[in-house]
Structure formats: structure tokens, C-alpha cells
Image 1 (cartoon, helix red, strand yellow):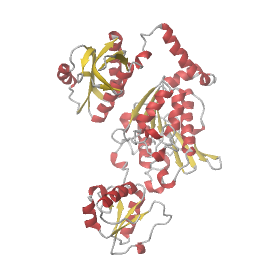
Image 2: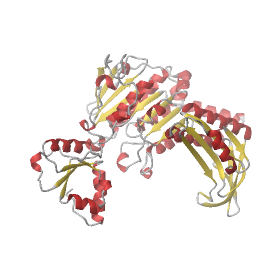
Image 3: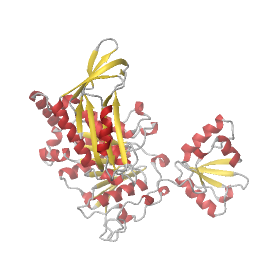
Image 4: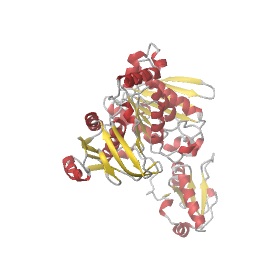
Length: 517
């Protein structure tokens, strides 16, 4: 499972791969860490690893066992080399087999991240100028081979970190221990997720998971307060994880920089005790709701619209209503505008995300909550709150005694208009010349800020019209309506405004066509 060796790892890989073979495995993922010739801009000639071997072996075996328990994998192996290594030699190798590749990817990343953080292995780099120094040993300072004085100091620091919270009689030492033993997954690291993550980390939730596929954009920063302008372009999940580890060194933070999907939802949610839905679209919200109910995982959901927000809870051990109790079918995405379409004031998701964290902490430590039977509606302009009684639907297709939804069916959670429909045009499939030759003459119709959609009389039969909105949902619905009315020279731009901007740039570079934007 785990080993420390002083000889070349390359000679060990072939037998280890054979050892990983399993008749039910359809995926094999490996990681190799090599010695490079530089570090922080300094030329490196060689390096050496030293280890507290017995402790490293024990901790490494524990990491492998954790991966086997937490992920749906078949087998896992890891070896770490010690002693002197030359440039280009392999320092660490991880191999994982599983039925599906997603679980193998997750487990492989988990193992290498934990090995880097937890193993008492020291690296000494020898530089071209003749100097040498120990590097990347911050994690080793937290290991149990330290002196009793250091261990006592760390315990005191941890106790002091939570001291104001533990003073509350409803929390106390027992409540703090429950928080430390809890595992919470936050799906969405945006306007709702940022404040939720900050307060969950500060409260001392032992393991925090962050799932978000997006990279930070400049228009996120006014409400997503975990990030900085220098972070633009980087994956939000990874950024958030780094900030939270710096905020609280006494917790574990895991990041999943990919989209939640019907293929991976059950594997991911099954690893956690509590789920927070901090997303902004119906398909993902219903996927989270359905998966949480099927897995019997407590779920706290929040949504916002301009200055309003709502907060609700589903709990498997309480008679709470799920989303399907009130909406058996997933609503059309275009029925409510997103932040990109209708705008958002940063403090609104900040308030709701904070309440999500508060609600989670309350339940973990055993404080009472009215959300067991109510949905909370808030107007952040007037500060009016309206608690609404939520009745469980005895005929709910998901959580009733006789459900019709008993598994996650990927076909139920389509996220975007399908490009293969004849009126949804994927601009990325055209070169500038091909687009111009195929559709000229053409006009562009921007629906992003129009209060009323154009009627069929607004379209000439002599021109092709390309309608676009922010993401392609509303334009697709509008084109479908127009085509039913006999207007066949209208098209919807798949993926909306961003796709138009890309083609606009291409057309201008090739001096083909003019845009009416």
C-alpha cells in the first residue's frame, strides 16, 4: 500500500501496476513527482530526502486506507524515495485503480496532497552556487514526533482559536468536538459559497469540501470576498481552499475544481455529513437536492434574486419538504434571471451565505432551528422576513413513501440548450469565412437587456437573425417561439454573449462582415 525506498522508483512501477490490477477496475490513474532543476528561481543541482521512516510509513499507510474508505476505488499504492536524487529522477509515485476514472482521479489527488502535507519527510536542495537548504518543511512542523513542549503549544493555540465560541454554553467543548468531527461539502464557491466557507472554516468544521468548476473573473470580486484581483483566472475551488487553510490551520480543506454532474454527484456527496447548495441554476440545484435525498444527507439551500433571498433545509430525520415536494419538475432555467442577467448587490448573497453557515453550525452543535419546518424569505431592501410553513408532499416523486425518482438519471439534468437543435447555432464550429459565406446577410439581436422581445413583424425575410442573451437560454426559447410562428430565418447563439464576442473578434481580424451590437 505504501512504501519508502532508497533505490530508483522507476524499477518498481511495473510490478506495482500489476499489483493494482482488479477485474472490476476500468480506470488506472498515476502520479509521478520528479526532481526539477530549479526552485523559486534558484538553479538546483541535486537534492536529498530524509524521513522519520517508522512514522512516515505508518502515516502513509493511514493515508492510503483513508483513500480506500472515502473514494470508490479498488486499490491504491504509493512509494516515496529517500536519500540523494539527481535532476529528473522520480521522488514519489502514486497509482490508483477504480471502476470509473473520476473516482481514480479524486483518490490519486487526495493521496498526493495528504502525503505532501502529513508525512515527516524533509527535502534538502543543493544549489548551483554551492549553498544548500531544507525546503518545504512547514508541514513537518505539525507532526507528532515533536517535543512535548511543541505539542502543548499547538494544543493551546487550537484551544485559543475557538475560545470565544466555546464560551457559549450551547457549544462548549463537546460542541466544538462535534464540529471538529464533521464533514461539510459546499457546492459553489461564489457569492453564497464565499461567506459560507469563511464561517464554516472559522467555526472549526473538521473537513471542508469545495466543489466549483469556474475560474475567477473580475466581475466576481465585488461579492466573492474570498478572492483578490491578483487571483483572476485561477480556479475558484483551489483559491478558496488556499485561503481557508491559511485562515484556519487546524482543519482539512479539500477542493474539487470540476462541475458537479449526474456522473459524479453520488460519489462526492456520499463522503460528507452535510451539504450546502450555493449554486445559481435550477438543474444543479435539483441534482443536489435529488442526490442528497437519495443518500439521506442533510441539505441547506439558499437562493437569491436581486435584493431578495430564501433559505431552506432538508433533513432525512425530520419531516421537512424537499424541492420536489413543491416543484416535481425542474423549472425552465429562463424563468428566473441569474446574477449575470439581472444584477446583484454583493451584500445580498453575503447575508444568505452567512446564514447557511450559521444554520449548519447550529445543527451540528445541537441548537434549535425553525428551518426544520419553515422556509425563510428575506427582502434585504426593507429587512422584512417572512417565514413560510413548508408542508411535505405525500405524493412527492422523490421523498414520499412511494417515489418515482429512485436514481440519478443524467438525462434529467441537461444544463444548456442543445447545440444539435437546428435553431441553436454553435459559433465555435465555424471559421470566419465559413460563417460569413453561410449566413450573409445577417444581423445580431441582443436580448440581454430588453424588457420586451421583438415580435415576428420585426424580422425581414431577406436577412438571417442571430438572437443572443447571456447564456443562450432565453434566446433559445424566443427562437423556438418565433419558428412556431413561421419565422424560420432566426437562430439562437449557443452559449450566448461570450460566443458572440469570440466570433466578433475573429470576423474583425479577418475583415469579414459587420456586427450590429
